[in-house]
Length: 449
Image (tube, rainbow, N blue to C red; front, side, top):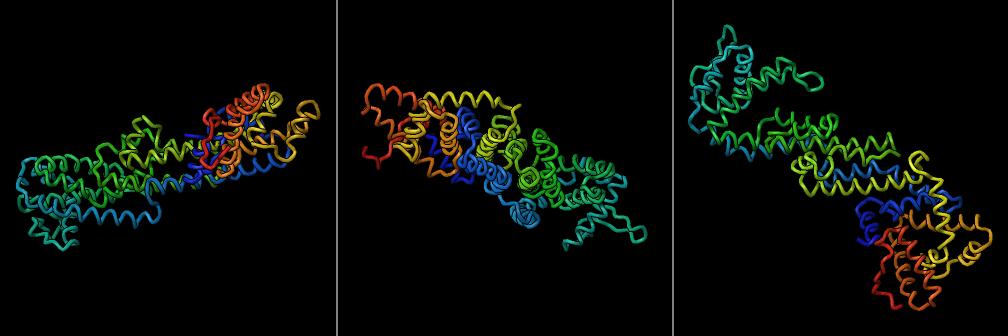
């Protein structure tokens, strides 16, 4: 993409861009030029600082724009739950009416005399009452003396579903303040898993029902797992979500994007000059990795691709900031400054004319000074001019600079051979500064020159 168009596109997408963001050569030249004293370079440095300060907030907005809303998570979770319940209802109706509940393996599981199963049967009976179902008709028998619940008949799939939910409920009651179940809870969940697996095998309708809506507890667990995934590291997301049903994946995605947006906003406040984009990349992985593919499956391929593009734009913007504010240990500033001054000495005349398209105010004095006058003072002036263009955040101004470069290249055919050699050298200098794409002719339909 032509450089001015790339700058304009990034800016329109909410990520203010400069020419210096687009290539390492432009960034290095900008980093050298912007250190020159002068009002123009000071203004550019302030603008780059201000852009960097807002990076975390912009990326939080990008998460919301591309992955989905993050406000009122509890309300969103309820909306997801209600929609899932509606979609799952026909599957549950079919599952409850299906034969096969007398399966020997299932019967043996429900006759387990452990404390966990006794607690699950009691909880299942309470669920039936809460949902206006007749627990006696479903086979739950309450001993009035001991308050112990037993099954008085071969259970139906509706009864088995309540028992499964009872096991999950008993395990849920063992959670600590951080949402983690204790050892007893894990033992109970280990009892529930083979039961659910066998019910899926015997009754395909039940498997379809669970995929559509697996219960409030499983949804809450998945939402919490999505939030916690940022702490555990992106490489673990595939392991965490392996075997997730669509219902669980929806909740994981909600928790994940909510935590991701909050993390970007918080990071931006605490570390306004840090590389928020690099931190965000840790959450979705690099394109081509298993983690990235997993995130695409959870949030949508196009959505994750767009977020990655936003992250790359902000990462490159941070690299430009580092070129301005980074320390000498990360880049050899002295060598860069010397290289920049040599480039200006050799081709400043052509570069400034190519940038401006016609003599700007004071340009003649600068060119004469560089030819043998006060080079220190006027080199600073040239560097101010280059820094303003390479680091300018006005997309319209960038487009204007590109048009003028294109016009000046067209004029090269009209000058004598000596001047043509100089302008060709200038064009190569500009190309190095802006990247090869920038130095190509700009075809402006409004130009008649």
